[in-house]
Length: 137
Image 1 (spheres, rainbow, N blue to C red):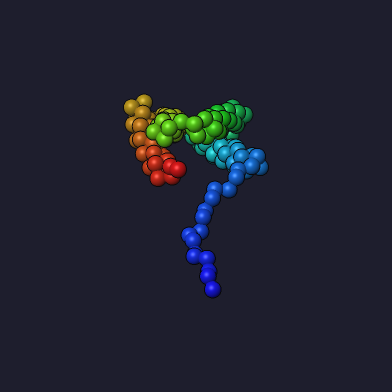
Image 2 (cartoon, rainbow, N blue to C red):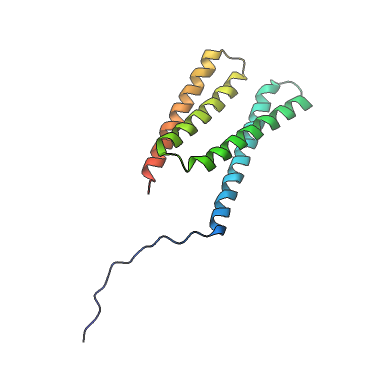
């Protein structure tokens, strides 16, 4: 009696539907909003400098958080079409500028804030490049 020879299991990529892309976009928006909220609260807390909370601090935190979230969401949407080097560099520059700005709010020198931003940006850029390089299709 003849039997069929065993074959290796085939793994096909599942077809992506509109629901999957909506779910991905919703995750990106949620992540950007949460990170923007954290950044805005952090910026408002630093700007307050142990004084009372007033409307100016609240507005400042909302503005910083909204800008951070908008740039992060746009970078997530546009970054997929960029090569991995530019995508990693864009995230490195974005996070370096964000960290340097937060450090500049502490009334430190401009050189120190620039150094902190450069160090954070370089580190995040290297980590992002490694992540995109190892997960390339």
